[in-house]
Length: 309
Ligand code: G3H
Ligand code: 13P
Ligand code: ZN
Image 1 (tube, helix red, strand yellow):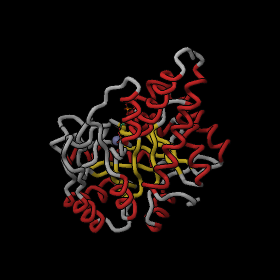
Image 2 (cartoon, rainbow, N blue to C red; image 1 turned 90 degrees about the horizontal axis):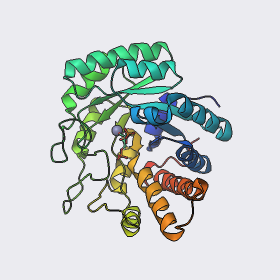
Image 3 (tube, rainbow, N blue to C red; image 1 turned 135 degrees about the horizontal axis):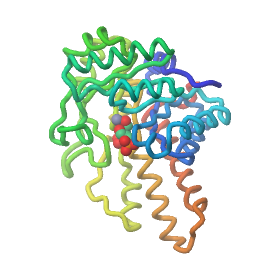
Image 4 (spheres, helix red, strand yellow; image 1 turned 45 degrees about the vertical axis):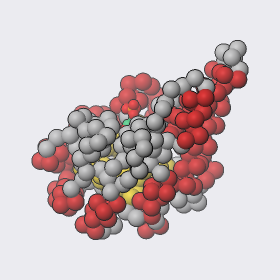
C-alpha cells in the first residue's frame, strides 16, 4: 500500500472515539518495532520525523525505511514532518515524499503564525499533502516556555486560525509537554480539559492533536535508574487522561519519549546482564522488541486504535 494522508484516518478516529498514534522515528529498529506493533494490532499509524531525525539519519534513509515498512506490512501509514520550523523545511518534506507536514508557527505572533501556516497549506494541498498547525505553546522544549508557564491555547482564536489557514488538523496546548519531566515532583498531573472541550465546541468534527503525550512509564524509569541511569523525578501524562482525550476530539497523539525510555532501559539492562556483548544486534534486537511492546501498550491503553483498519 502507498503512503496515505491522515484525512480518512482522522475522520474515522473522530467518529470512532479513538486516536492515531504518531511515533517519532530515527532509525531502522525504531521503525520496525513500531510497525510490527501496528501490524499485530491492525492499527493505522503515523510515523513522524523531526528536523533532528532528518539530520541524524538523512531524509532519504528514513523515507526508504518507511517505504520498506509499507511493503512489509501493507498498513495505512502516514509519513509526517514533526515541528516544521519554516516554509522551506515543509517544502523539502513535501517534495521529498512525505504525506503530511506540521508547520509550527506557534512561537510567532498570531498573525505571523497564520501567514506562514497558510503559505505551507497552499503548497501542501497543491501537492496532495495535509498540514497540521499549532496554536499555543507547550512547556518544555518550546522557546521561553517553562514547565510552570504553559501558554495554553486560547479557544477564541481557533476558528479564525483554521478558517484563515485551511489547516487539516490543529495541535493545541492544554498542559502536555515534551520530554520526560512534565510535572513538578509532588504535584498532581493535570490537563486543561476545559480548553479542549471549548476548542472542540468551536470546531465541531475537526481533528485536534496533542503533542508531548508520553506517559513516562514508571517501570521504564525504574529500570533506567536500576542499571546506572539517573532520571529522578521523571513524570508523564497519566494514560487514562490521554484515553479520555482520544475518546473526544483528539485524533492524533504524539509519543517519542516513551520509546526513547523503553529503548534506553532495555539497552542498559542488556549491558548490565551481558557486559561482554559487543555485537550491536545483541542489544538492538531486544531494544526493538521493547519499542514494539511499548507501542502495543499505547495502542491498547491510550489510543484505542486496535483493529481499526
Ligand atoms: O517534539 C519533539 C520530538 O520528541 C522530537 O525530538 O527533535 O530530538 O528529534 P527531536
Ligand atoms: P513526548 O516527549 O511526550 O514523547 O512528545 C513527543 C512529541 O510531541 C513529538 O512532537
Ligand atoms: Zn511535539
